[in-house]
Image (cartoon, rainbow, N blue to C red):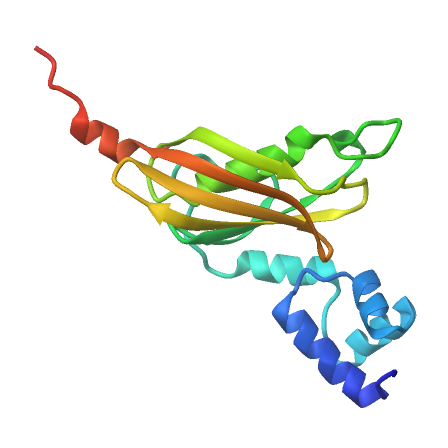
Length: 193
């Protein structure tokens, strides 16, 4: 059953508040209305378009990346809580995909997830020592991949980071990364003689 305009707009506000990266296409499908209706609703509610919402989220204060330069992260970091969690967004364009099929090359999805796993580490140096990955479904040109990293175990020598990537509502990639932390290596080195 379709909601009336007021109910739909309330639900729209809540949906965007929960997931600021949701597209107008996804909203139209969710509420069974046209994209134009979603755009008009957003306009009436003074909710900016997706690009502006992403810029707003990116400008919010979050921790600084320590283990690598921020420009070395594949995708745009929009949230970072060191040693806790991080989120990045990667727009899949033709340079990321096979020209014949339009399907994203797997190494780009892996690179986004792996660089996010490095970025979430609260240390000057973090290296991937092991990765277990699973590609769940192909990603195509034009899709936006949101990668979410979460530190699930932290020990003296290593940290385990789980990264899940989504295109729209679809889970497209899962990875578990075992990360080596440099500060423990410094403490365990023998002094030179």
